[in-house]
Length: 158
Image (cartoon, rainbow, N blue to C red; front, side):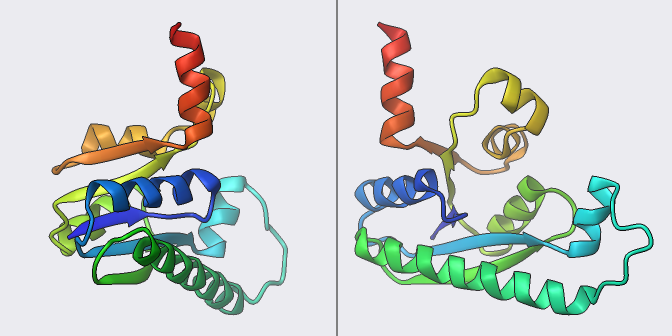
């Protein structure tokens, strides 16, 4: 079984298509992560003095992540992967750690993730989920650039 991290971006969609080409017929789980509103606000340093229904926001956010994961699972089936399930993952630590824990829990033999192709400054400031996965994984991680990112990178190599 392969685990595919999906966020609905074009890069993530391209990763699913490539995963279907590389692992035709393999079972897959497509995951989409979401973060609790309170954690998001705490990281942003905002929200002090706000009256917010955190539970409602978290429920809606989880529902959106579930719908996005289902969208990714549908794409995975169309791409030729076998039995495919979808799951929304609540992030409690970091996105990479959440994905790694889920891969371990599901006994995934490989984690597939798209590459956004962030420039070096953005990657430094924002961090890279794919980089964190590569550095901390206990199993293979396949980082697949979208065709656009791959073409841009190839142009710099010539």
